[in-house]
Length: 75
Image 1 (cartoon, rainbow, N blue to C red):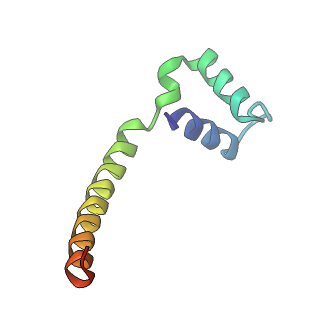
Image 2: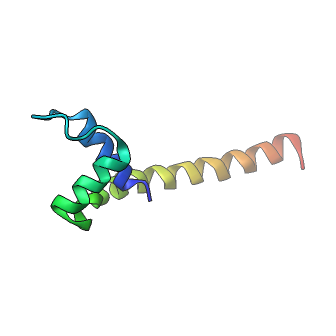
């Protein structure tokens, strides 16, 4: 859900010839009308590939720490 906002943030922070990208919603509107719906989801695959393993590691660490703390301190 937040990918279009990441695209807007990148456009606002990136180099611009003119200050066409000024606000988040305005930037999303401009990108949508100039480049289409798919342009709002540029970078989706790299983001999934980056966050997927991180989420898996987080869940494994959480489960192991929960089990360890339950053994150490009881329920």
